[in-house]
Amino acid sequence: MTVRSYFLPRSLSEALGLLDARGPELLVMAGGTLTMPLINEGISLPEAVMGLRLAGLDRIQRSGETLLVGATSTLTQLLEQDAVPMLREAARNTASWPVRNLATVGGNLFTPPPGGDVAVALLALDASLVLASARGERVLPLAGFWTGFLGTALAADELLVEIRVPLPSGPTAYRKFGRKHANTPAVVTVAVHLAWDGGRIADARISLGAVGPHPIRARRAEGLVLGTRLDTDTVAAAATAAAEECQPFTDAVASAWYRRRMARLFVGRALEQLVPGPAHEGR
Amino acid sequence: MASTIVTFELGGREVEVLVKPMTTLQSVLRDQLGFTATKEGCRQGGCGSCTVLVDGEPMPSCLLPVEDVAGRQVTTLESITPADGLHPIQQAFLEAYAFQCGYCTPGMIMLSKALLDRDPAPSDEDIAQALAGNICRCTGYRPIVRAVRAAADAIVADSDGQGR
Image 1 (tube, chains in turn red, brown):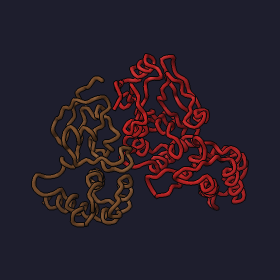
Image 2 (tube, each protein chain N blue to C red):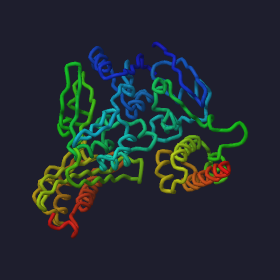
Image 3 (cartoon, each protein chain N blue to C red):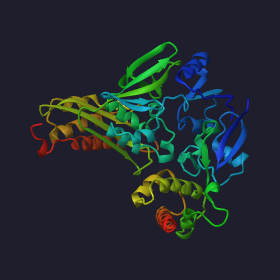
Image 4 (cartoon, each protein chain N blue to C red):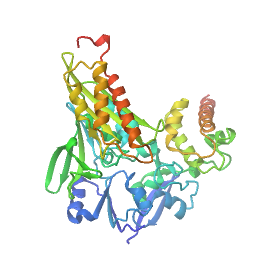
């Protein structure tokens, strides 16, 4: 154990002050589920760590048509809210109960694939992020947050303080496929949000996890379903497109070859789940 | 490396420890306080053998800097074991042959306690979901699920008895 200082700020302003004064040498930790294993094994040897557990950033509340999720809200809290069912589904499919009691929603955005299963849902929901520093605050669409594997647009003096989730305006689907039924890293994770207008799809967001350097939108697949009535041919074409455009990798969980095939299968299943039945004709 | 004093409640008693920054709750329990029921497994939050309750919520003690539990209530297997005999969950694990080497058992029992505190009559599926973060390499999981169900029945029967 080589950590020399551990700070537990009691407010956002105190946290931002510490970050401003100490800069990049300060390792920021929220739930600790990513950081503590590295410290325990001596892989990460930070001089100074700032824990955010007491900084008061853990409220989940609805404001009009937006769900405001404090960055250090736990996955257990996310499981308990009912404003956005897909986020419950994502939380339920992530890690185990004891880990969900620590793991934070904000931290999930920094989880390298094949983790980050909540982030996949947030991307399909078109969430945006509030980033704060001593200089002020800015709001960034989640789609512009990741810059590469473990790379983000977060500046060295910034903290992620809130995730703003527009309430879904149409049906959603969430599918995570792993090697076990629970507490398992993803082979592929798929989240879909559709908006209908006059029986046709007016907006489609399809996001994929564990088949790229970070959660990604399947833009070609989205383009294929846009304006259609989502018949089975469209579903098949979109699933194929998503499998082609994703960037799967090989690791201990699955091979790139297998991930690409499962991406096709599970994008197909997620979309099929949203195909209008006879009861919905003329919607 | 400045050490600090951290105070928390352990099994209903206030304890005070002098720790280097970010010493884990797991290490404090085992190495400083001698509460060795809490096991050290993967130290990554992946095996469940170090599960303790913090304010009644199950948490992996290997991922918690002890500073984070200052002022909070920590419950370990020692805290729920009666002076004489066994807790109903322990008794059920014994009777259902729900352990062999026993290394995962304290974590399994603490998780089961948290589950039964919330849901006195969980289904097998509920039990399996709740225990998904607790790894056992000996028994397979069926005896463990049976034990938790038996413990649930025993606890309900006992409280019914007391209610008369």
